[in-house]
Image (cartoon, rainbow, N blue to C red):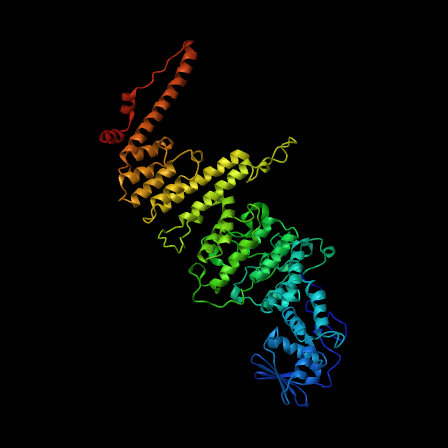
Length: 639
């Protein structure tokens, strides 16, 4: 990815206001000359003959120091020591110091004039510790606050890799990192680089991304590709060990893997900043999908390996390399393990085994829902439905679930049967296997959306007045598109009803309401609905005659195909009245078919003979004779 010219920063090799070579030091040693610090067990000692007169305790670490070096550079230490009534040595407990013992060790070394290496992994903790210790310019020119700020501004924020690492390290520094604007500045830096011209990106081939458990901050940093100024890189070059990828264009999703190592609140900050800078909504949606696949693998455990990749939309992914058989490729960095989460035996079963507690899972799902771009097709309907399944299971806030249901309604025609088979997680005593009420709500949202789009002037082509033909698109097509979408949804609902009808606990009312939710025009053929009714009758053999009639009223016998009519005529589970309707409907179809055939023949014969030919319309006896024997036998029984 992006890389600054100086890989590891150093601030102030000679003290004062110098920075840029990665080593932090001070010209002054506070009257105590030392060769460094020594660690003995859980205690740090200054390598000097002068006895210690100050003991600082932070957690389980002890620091045996001297007052004057710290008094001269730290306002807080000055005040605490002055207010202390302890006999020598003075004992101070600083358990609330941001950055912990590691940051205080570096700050103490700076006070003694011991050189300190500044890196992207320790700079945020040291900056927060300097603020906590009040190491300002009022006490000494070139104090720790100034030097850490200089390193952040001139080294970290100019590097993609370092900006990611610093933002990652801020996870343990709340609220200090927020108050000092470190999180905001790093998020803005990452967003700016993600949205800018990628000509400065120099790729590195890393092959298959390792598992999160094998990734550390060090190999994250070492694997980052270099950033070069655009003027120096007229071509996209790859390392010599991967000559086949020379001059390969940078795919638009190059930044997905890097930002996916961030904690959810920082990821939201980055995505929000990227959105403000005008990133395409389909790329934003793809990055959210990628993040969910990394932190909530259960969301995609039923899908194919490439289902949640950026390639879910051909117009959004460009040169993405992902695919079902893909095992290597160009990565900006190695993936990192989601840190800061312990293995919780109470993890929800749907996402169990991934080391994230249900509380953290809920926070991730809620945050992802809140940042999904509002545009249709920014993410796939499959992803939305799996996110909805997780949201219901994790008891996400009802307002967010409602919002997510509306989003699914916008793309409901893209759903599959497998997507809709969401278990019922209701706590209201529901005993059904699947959440039929949820699908009912999704269908209602879809119908409202279709009605709104169908009557909206924005549905019209903006080029219509200019006489320019409108290009075909997924959402275009006006009334025909609406009707096609409804027909696809009707087939989907019929398949869903066939599946859930096998549940013996499914009430007849729920089945009937869902079957009748779509307008009659949505189904040109009721074979799917008949199949669902038959499945329900098989699973509920104790239905009364009245209930069976009520169930069959959702079906239009005149919309059944010939094969369905043949099956229905012999179906003993159907009410007698329905069988008669099916037989009559079939006879009408046969009569009409014969009449149409005869009319065509008469027209042809009349034209050939120059006379008018009157076709013979078959009577009822002829129709009955032409009916299959099984139909006749059943019909006799009906009489």
